[in-house]
Image (cartoon, rainbow over all chains, first blue to last red; front, side, top):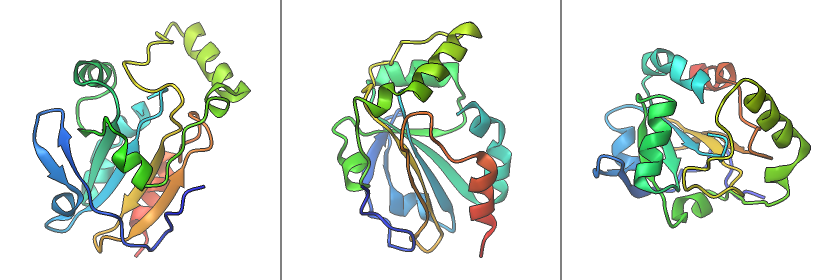
Length: 44
Length: 130
């Protein structure tokens, strides 16, 4: 079971994009964005 | 996923960046995007560090349950290519998260099986909540 809960601060991360750019969650939220994260299933 | 691609503008209107996180190899992911949609940023999490940090699971049996097999059968009948995992892990269940402007989770949706995902309308509703 996921231990992640609603209203909790999302853990920050930094990953590379397919374009080779380094992208962090903190940067995605700037300047004033929501972020929808979709973790792929093998169905897409 | 195709539904999400069609609603890209709706997410933009709500100041929302849509980010797809994949575990596949780079050429595999690019192939997948060409087949699906090219609008979203894809991040690579080959080591599944973020997948694990966000508490998502893998399951051999839930990835091969009746619902998933039925989905594949229908896709096959529609003439879609099936069985190509694009280098991804067949056991991954996936999930969806919405992080609000304040950095807190507005939605936490770990999938029960690979066919389980929140409808786009529900995602938009969560974004419309203040």
